[in-house]
Image (cartoon, rainbow, N blue to C red; front, side, top):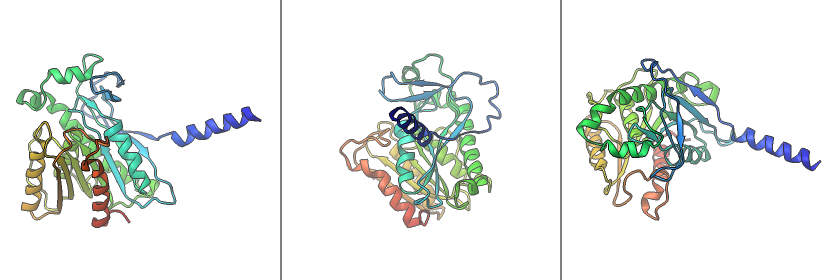
Length: 287
């Protein structure tokens, strides 16, 4: 009986932890045949994903008793070389599901890593330089397309996940913030985000068109001591939205640095996701 109980318990645990993974279109990068890999031993000391050539969405469902019909697509950061899949992906997803939000973690297409040490490769490339921006342009374009395709997929299948078609947003960190911002500038009716939340976004890697007439609401956040100066990107983005008479909210914390994600540092920035949740409620995106 003990053996059967153990087997049943294991089965239940596996079932509860299982996640649906949705393959998205990889049109344009069919020749990117390298294999997606995971790194757990790196200079950042965190779990990373690299060599993504086939974009996917991983679904995190809330308890059916608390599900509120809102969906958030989460885009981890990593300078288009890596994905900080835990702190800027799965951990945020799990937090949001506790609030009744259906979360989807997006693995968007990345630059090809030539070694099994993608972090050192990234350091060697000197991010946030003109040369680096030119190098990553193909990946940036594909990643924004992946973000748009993710929104369109979730909207098309909203009924399957008991999601409201007008409460589908996107949250992105650093390079993932580029994806979130990119979707807020260029979209079709099917792929328009109802809200976009770029967190310490990098917006210097693509040419920005004019703010659309029906631009989504923005929640923008960074720290003033961001090592890459992306707080300045946030301020300009906020000014663009206000200047075009669109809805935006900006939070700049005094301390927090770059890449804090869901990490706890004993600082007020640790609670940024509570402020995001407050904003969703105030905007009517969370019932």
